[in-house]
Length: 273
Image (tube, rainbow, N blue to C red; front, side, top):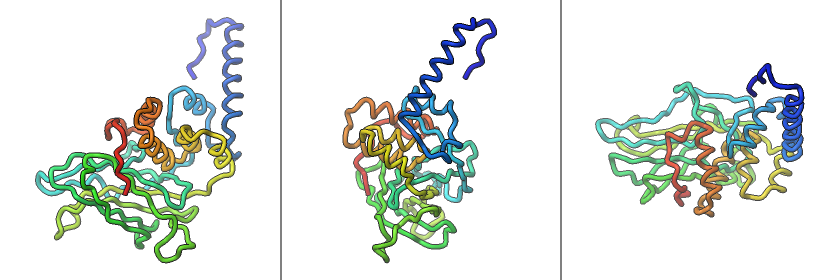
């Protein structure tokens, strides 16, 4: 909040703080996170989120990992630009460890213009150490480039139908790769993401239950859960492509995490894997 000018009258000062306290009361009534989350959230972020459209504020303790994949480029002139829909960090060699509350989250990738034929991609999910494959799937990209690709995971493992694919409090690495050279996999364009599943708090469950579905992305954003914020909004845009509020929310969300110059703003394609 900007520092008040010295010359303001006492009456104006009282009115100003009265309005701020009123806004605080309304925000608290509409969103009541757990006490542990309240310690990580600042009052200023509550006001900003309420007045600037759909904003993602990473107010939770944010982990990062060193970037081991990257926007790989194929040899010579053949290349394709891939962008994972993840918040951008100022350090180019690191990526955020983003949160999910689901055992089977949905990830989004933007596949841009390519200088070689792009027909398919490979999605691979590894454990936190990166030494064990948890899930993998071939994805058809026919007639989907350029465009957004949604990768929806199954709820359970392929071996045990009772075991969640993503376990609570565990971190996973995922890779999206486009085959290019069958003799040298190091030339395949690849992007990487890191996700951690956390428990779904009861306050989040209650907030979602009483909130219209159109506002669910805002609820997830308020709780600092990126994966469901962007995937729920993308799904809503597919269902209601002509809704101007969803379009504005999409633009605001991308801008709030530094993706506005990385991916286009047009409607999300129907490209779920």
